[in-house]
Structures are given as C-alpha cells and as structure tokens.
Length: 346
Image 1 (cartoon, helix red, strand yellow):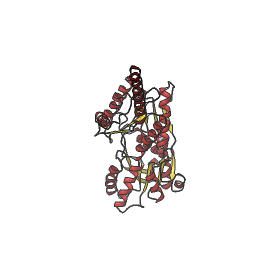
Image 2 (tube, helix red, strand yellow; image 1 turned 90 degrees about the horizontal axis):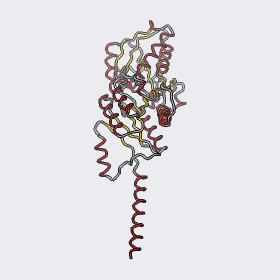
Image 3 (cartoon, helix red, strand yellow; image 1 turned 120 degrees about the vertical axis):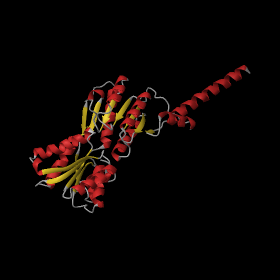
Image 4 (cartoon, helix red, strand yellow; image 1 turned 90 degrees about the vertical axis):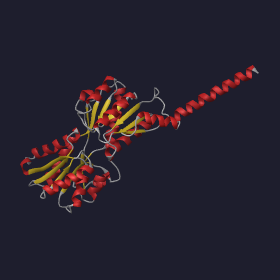
C-alpha cells in the first residue's frame, strides 16, 4: 500500500510538470497599450482570463515598440514588421499608442522600463521632449533605438535608424524644379517638432539652392499639421483661401499630402495645383495612379523595422553599431508606380 501511494504521488507530480510546461508554451501574446489601458489593468484582465504572458527565459527577450501613434499606416506597418520578427525569434513585443501625446508617450516608455524590457524601439512624438525618459532607460542599461524620427540626444540611444529624410526632401525639390522650371508659389505643410520632417524640409531647400532657384520659388505658407491628414485638410483650405494663386503644395508626408488633396477636391481645385509627398504609402501610390499626387519620395517601414531589430540584437550581444543608420529613399511617380504596386509598402 505504501509503495502504491508513492507511485501515485510520482504520477501526480509528473502531470503537474507537463501541464505547467504546456501552459508556458501556449500563453505568448501581443500587447497593445494606449492611453486608456494601463499595464495593471491589462495584467488583471489576463489573470481573469487565465492567459498570463510568462516571464522571459534565457532564450526569450521582451521588447517595447513605443510609437507616436497607431493612427498612421506607416507607424502601424513598422509595428507589424517588428511583431513578425519577434514572433519568428520567440521574443515578446509590447506595443504602445500615445496618440501623438508627448506626456502619454513618456509615461508609456516609463511603463516599459518598469516591466523590465530588454530593449525599446522608440518613434518619438517630440525628438527633444523624450530626453528625461531616455536618461531613465540609460540608467537601467536598457538600449533604445529611435526609429524614423531621430532623437536629438544621440548619446542616450544605441542608434537612430531613419530613412534618408534629407534625400527624400531633395527628391521633392528636384521634382518641383522639373515641373516648374520658371519657379512657382508653393505652400509647405510640415511638422517641425519631428527631426525627420525637419530633414525633409532642409533637403528640399538644399535642392532649390543647388539649382540656383531659391529666388524663383516663393513659399507663401509653411504650417504645422503634425504629419496628420485630419489636421492638414483645414490648414490647406485656409492656405488656398488666403493664397488663391498658390501653384504647388509640399506635404511633409503622404497623409499630409492626402489631406491637401481632400482640401483641393472640396475647393474644386484638384488638378489645378500640384501636390508632393513623402512616404510611398499604399494610399499615396494610389493617388499617383489617379494623378492627384505628383510625386512621393518613398521609404520602407518594413526595412526600418528589420534594420532596427537586427541592430538591437547586436547591442544585446555586446557588439558595436553605428550611431546613425540611414535607410534609402527614392522617387515614385506615375511613370514607375506600377513597379511597386498600391496594395502594400515597398
């Protein structure tokens, strides 16, 4: 009888171990945190559903993608690509959405640090405004890679991985010069708190200067739409009313350019004014196909995600990486848009 009880205990212990391992293997999940969802609430809900993400083992890493918004397909695509890479390598990714609110983004980065992530992918709302939280991450030896929108305090990040935004602006400048060889009145819808957008503007100006065309192009308006379609549309409407002879708009990204297209359509001026953008987004390329957008300087969010992920792994492995890593940008217009397609990002 004693031997039978001992055997029963051994069998029971074996079943417990098997069930524990099965539960561990089956409960990996993707977390998205916005301003209405705290980590504590997410954890409580997971416990209630018996679906708790396990702590990382030696073969797993936990990362955070702290973007500026998930209401922009470019940022969403970066997150999706990072998620795919993490899934393929057995890593966990927490995705945060501050909806362009700098204070919320800082709070979310702090949350990621508190959770003990191994690394942070950061697309800052404000390139200057994240300094304090970068200092906190550095004090915890958590590497941060800034994606797309470089941070100002480069010493506080492992690297800035961004599209060649200066070249993107240069491409647009060259395109406008080609379309208006005698000069034109132009309006610019930008986002001056984002280093990427500042670089796009400076590249544009450099193209005019190099061609000796600065005096021939009059910038009748330059306003901030925070790289948003919704904000760009009313701004463009006001510019059109104040400057009825404006000949071209340079939207600092494709959503901004699409906001201008919507404004011109509402004003029955679509086709009379040329519009230029930056991104090479599916919607931007569709606008090239129907000839409402003249040119987009294209970038690759998937390429940015892949480059960022590869480099943060190098940092975690003790390797040295470059502080500034540029990903190519290139011109897409009606003549070559079919090479890239309109159904997805290149």
